[in-house]
Every structure is written in C-alpha cells, then in structure tokens.
Amino acid sequence: MHFTSAEIAAWVGSFLWPLTRVAALLSVAPIFGSRTLPRRVRLMLALALTWAILPLTPAAPALEPLSPSGVLVAFQQVLIGLSMGFLLRLAFGVLDLGGQMIATQMGLGFASLVDPQSGAQSPLLGQLYTLIGSLIFLSLNGHLLLIRLLVDSFTILPVAPVGVDRDLFWILVAWGSQMFAGAVLIALPAVASLLVVNLAFGVMTRAAPQLNILSVGFPIGLVLGLVIILHSLPTLLGQLTRLFDLALRDVGRMLGGGG
Image (cartoon, rainbow, N blue to C red; front, side, top):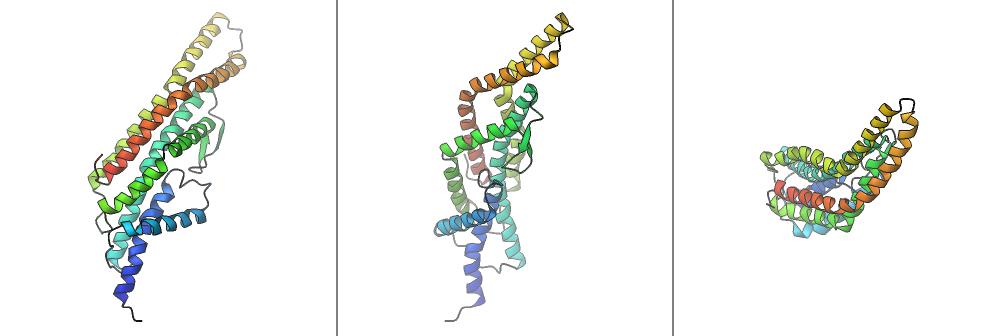
C-alpha cells in the first residue's frame, strides 16, 4: 500500500483540528477544567469526545500540520474552544464573587481555601456556592448542552483559517458586567439583611459604649448570616437556571448561531 503525504496530512488533520478545539474547551470549561480532574483523564475525555463527534463534523482542509496555514488553523481552533469555555467560566465566577460578598459582610472573609476549579485562594462561602452551582449545572444537563454546542460549532464554524468574528468577542466583554450584576443579585438578600444587623450593632454601641461589640457582634452576625443563607438558598435555583441559560445562549451567539 502506498500513501502520499497529502493523504496522510488529510487523515491527521481530520482528527487533529477537532481535537485541538475540544481540548481547548475542556481545559477551561467549568467542571471539565477543574484542577481536581487529572490531566490524563481530561486528555482521554478529549480523545473520546473527538472520536465520537468526528463523523458529525465537516471534512477538514488537507493542510500540513506544521505549515503556516496549519498553524493558523490550530490557533483558530484553540481560540474557539477557549472562548466557549471561558464564557461559562465567567458564569461560574458569579457564584464565587457573590459568595465573597456575603463572606465579607459576615466577617468570614479570612476563611479561604484553595478553589478546586481555578487552583487559587477563594472564600469558603464562594466555594460553597460554586459547589451548589456545579450540582445544579449537572442536574440541568448543562454539560450535555455544552457538548451539543461543541458539536454544532463545527457546523457553524467549520475548521478553517477563519474563526470567530472579532465583533462577537464583545459578548465576552459584556459578560464582565453581567458577572458583577449576577453576583449582586445572589448576595443582595444576605448583604441587605446583614446591613440591618450591623446598623443595630451601631445603635447598641452608641447606647452602651462599654459594650464590647466585637466579642458580641461577631458570633451574632455569623449565626444570623448562616440563617439568612439557609433561607435564601431556595431562590438560588431560579437565579442559576436563568444564568446558565443566558450563558449557553451567549455561547451560541458568539459562534454566530443566533439565540
């Protein structure tokens, strides 16, 4: 059997270009890109997903992988995958930021651990909200919708030297303000309630200056904060459902597939 270099390049490229996009997405996407997930498992998952979606993707261009055109195609695939995963990472950043606001108001800003999602220091309440958000995301089949968007992206944006339109990257920029707005909505019930508690402590301090407000106010604020969080958790489901739905729709918009 005799194979030409063009045929070998076409076979390698037909698997290499989709693998590049899939691996880039899994490296930054929430849950899939978690530091607790070993890199070998992530690589095996990328290979399995690429092999599964390969029959559904259009034919890739027959380019040499190390040629300038091949490097440009690989760069475009990495950019598309990173954009999709980063937008969802911003959606999960809403939970971390909202938990940080509540922790600061409660006096738990010093209680921080290593976030398994990003590997950086994060407040304990931020990790709690991120864990709850991850469970809600999985229960809503968000991971399956993300894989569906990944498969559709090869039809909307086939493997080519031209990738995402630069104007559509403004969607990522807009999600910066969306992240802060969503965090305020999540933290607003607890922050507003604890603000009333702090005002009451201020009145107590003015009425009885000899009262040690730090030793009295810290445990009361902590307990009341936990009670407020407990009663505000049922409203979190609706907020996160709308947040994840908006994030997945914006991923489709960024790919040029509409709403």
